[in-house]
Image (cartoon, rainbow over all chains, first blue to last red):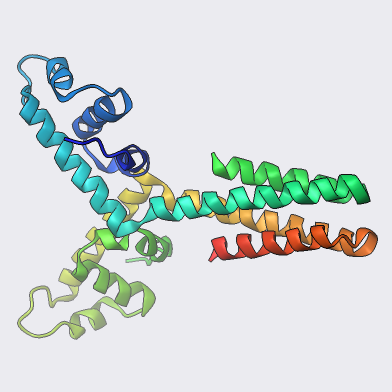
Length: 125
Length: 125
């Protein structure tokens, strides 16, 4: 089973729509990079789904739900566009800053550039 | 039953997670501003749920799902923060523009301001 690296991002956006168990297994698998067998071995005795195959089923189904949500809602894609735009805005702010330092030295422009970079930076987090 | 105006925004973000029927009723109710009785009267004979009460139940349940999604995922709130930030960036760009026109007349600053406004504007749509 190939690890799908988009899943980590989808999990961050849509994870709250999954069950605790789904989130826990995906977290082990993607964020802690455990194998299916290692995850199965981590599950307490007496709980359902201790086999490698059972863990795989839970993960596969949860991945399917996350991918389905992104296909329907596209919010990760929308946020990625916002991030790209914010990076471009920061680049423009740098250009203004350099030009202002070299030729203008306007305090007003300086302050506005600092503010743009702060806002764009905080929205990118 | 009071109309909850947030629902229109939630519908825009999360509507694809609802069934066609739920989306259709919410669309009638919120976007076309029909009453429950009017929506019930619009449903073809022979279809389930032709009573005012049945329409109300579908809408109430769908609203609950949308509110639950926003409570869990908070993506509307996140996008609203982005919009506020982009508006502030545009204001800063205006300040830079005015200062540049009055005191500097740097072509480079002018071009960068235009680009910032274009990017922030397109991301706000």
